[in-house]
Image (cartoon, rainbow, N blue to C red; front, side, top):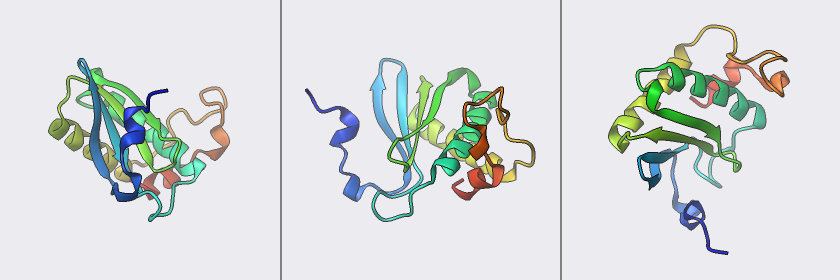
Length: 133
């Protein structure tokens, strides 16, 4: 099988940050690296899950909500994928950073934090999400 684009990135030399991973027509995939692979402590499942709930909620309710398609964790526990429609890197990067700043200020219940709303609500915690914002 052909190697996919994300496996062609040298993860030994890939610092934390926001990167344009690929562009498919009008869909831009951004890698939002929270941890540098093999150097930083990886996020726990609870931290990733909690941050996913808050980041997805914040971005899907923000000024570019109509252009935000998907927010989800990387299986390697180093960050997230954010897919946006027709949003160039500079604007997406600023928007995602604003999202993290909003998470740090957030003081409320976890969005989607009930048994009815989430398949594993046990490991959701607002403070866990803030730890990696």
